[in-house]
Length: 276
Length: 253
Ligand code: HEM
Image 1 (cartoon, rainbow over the protein chains, first blue to last red):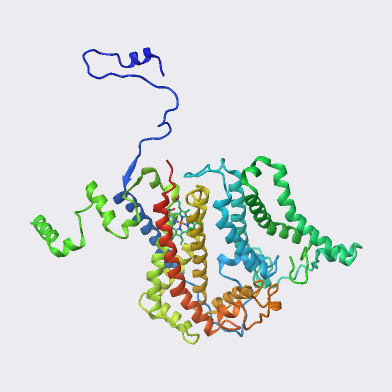
Image 2 (spheres, each protein chain N blue to C red):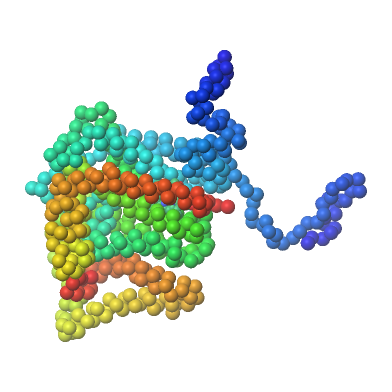
């Protein structure tokens, strides 16, 4: 409560008046940080915005139609196969993954995990902060992880659209896109073969690659609890396991890309049924 | 004179049967119009002024929905001229671009608004993530959103085959090759062959109705593109919009 004298100064009591300033109150009241509700009618305020947005976007589309027509090539024919064969642009990211992963992973398993992972986001993110405004600082982990996945999707798409030419080779925009490129000549090796080459027995080499793969996932499941104990406790066991196994999967493609480019590794694990 | 005419029209049974209130320029009528029109009813009567800020939503969700409307209109137009038959489809599209009145414009609009929709839906998701709008109580609506995104991509993709040109055939061939590699149910996927799946009974066969992309695939993609997926995405949007109303909009305080 403020000093009585302050109140008196601001609004001196006056016997002739039937009203007076009673008291000024300091500190956190119920209503602090809440402004009076400031609402407006949807008609016309929001509807105008919607109308304008619709008209502007329609105008832009019509304008595009004046100079760019929907493509139409020769009639479909199984006699001539185009080179390269490209999926629609929004799936080129997945097609680009085919360079690094077998189709069952690139085309099926990873997309399913992307969808499942996205569905799970609201249930895994227990940080209550940052709702209702563009937030960056209050939830660094969530934002960075999401950005990392989001960027991967678009970077792979951009590579697929603008840098892949004949035989799915890497082409720069200024290269001659009608000339075949010699293949890099580097032979790709599987991890177990490399280990075998170093003198490790065949079975042992195989087992070592299995162990490495399991180790990779184990690392992601064990390290965080050691590094961030409090955060892990808040998550709880189920969320913790889901968060970090999904995170490990998210890191899989950049790691595979790195292994391929740096060490010419084709697969890091080979089983009779599938190869990773 | 004009006033009298207006009053007369407004008093007719016909007018009264359609409009239940006067022009929305008073608070009362501005509320009534939102209640009495089924389409406007998707909106609340009043919203927070701050939720209007363009910077917050950038209209991305609304524009995705608008793209879908545009696609429906132009798509219906295209359907009048298109037969999903491998001998006719390509020529139908050719005719659209040269012989049909407004045909080229409708096709171009359909194409570019489809591309725009894919992009806008992604962007909308990005905004929803960045503003934390998926947190309690909106978890479920985020899930509906993910499904809407998936269906949007599938709609675009199934439409890609319909012109039946080289681009279409081979893009879909690459895509459906992946289906072949599905674990357990594809003939080239892990444990597929072991479970007895071959090129003529696996998941890819189911999708394209054959071992290569041909007439059956065209018909299947046509039905998916023009009937099944639009119905699904419409239902999805209905739930999505309903939920935005029920969960409350996340807009800034
Ligand atoms: C066909 C696709 C979609 C349409 C037509 C659509 C439409 C809309 C509209 C009109 C809004 C109102 C606010 C705004 O415009 O931003 C909205 C909000 C929302 N959308 Fe979507 N959406 C679609 C896809 C998605 C996707 C892919 C996600 C997320 C994965 C999503 C999640 C949400 C959530 C959580 C809200 C509530 C946001 C809030 O309260 O701030 N939607 N959607």
